[in-house]
Image (tube, rainbow, N blue to C red; front, side, top):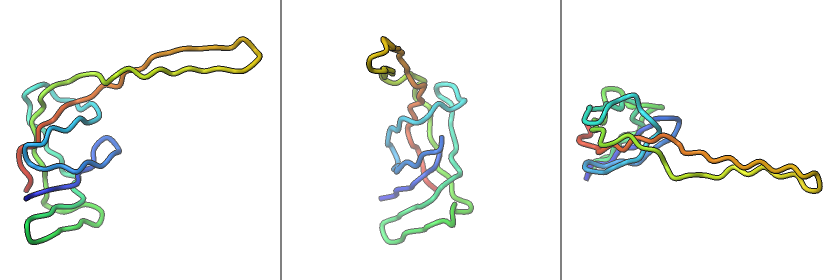
Amino acid sequence: MNNAIIETGGKQYLVAPKDKVTLEKLDAKEGDNVTFDKVLLITNDASVNIGKPYLANAKVVGKVLSQQRGKKLVVFKYRAKSRYRRKQGHRQAETVVEIESIS
């Protein structure tokens, strides 16, 4: 089974073919192919290849399924005994990608 660890949006993700991964927002439309070339590690059935820090000539190709926003987070600021309260919501923009191939 092929697995890879890719880096995108300042985070690292363990991916395999046919996985659906929710990533930080990418500049791509639905249906577009996306190539990740910051590959840190690739495993096959018999071998493990580790990059220093990235593997040369390695890439992971995925297809953008949707652009969406994550679940709502509540940001609440409060100071005791001073009547200070601020409530604000935030929804992070996300991209859902289906991994097609690891090479």
